[in-house]
Length: 189
Image (cartoon, rainbow, N blue to C red; front, side, top):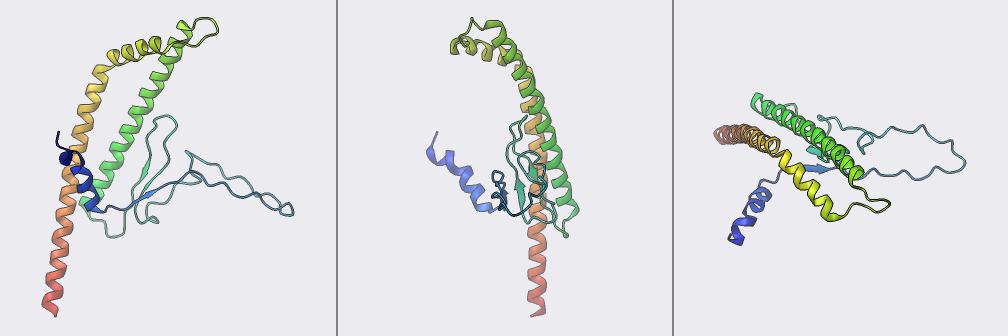
């Protein structure tokens, strides 16, 4: 495949200049001075001190990976002037992300349970199970779940096509409203 075609999607995505905010690892607070009384601890959920409010952030917020699904959760930004189509797009994205998170949480749970069972059955004395033996497990797991993965991929592509068509509609709507504002300002001048 031509090298230009491989990086073309990166070029296109970089041209969109979509705002993204990335959550960093939890920042550890410096220890309080000995003279101060320690504050009450804040419970950290999913590596974050708190989930940001979608109306207070000015871009989509991407959190640290979830422990069960290994996916990064999103907090979708929305403003006061969100159109109905943009709201529909945002809600569709949230729905698809929840579906995806649920699928991978269940899949990973099943994978690790079966992997632990395989290791327990094939562990030879005190030594660990060999890489060749584990490759047998990985192949059997994939063979056993090929239909689930196929159905997941088909569903994933259909859901993303819905998102893509909604996003295209939102972009057309924004372009039309921007053109309308420009024509109104040029008429007033």
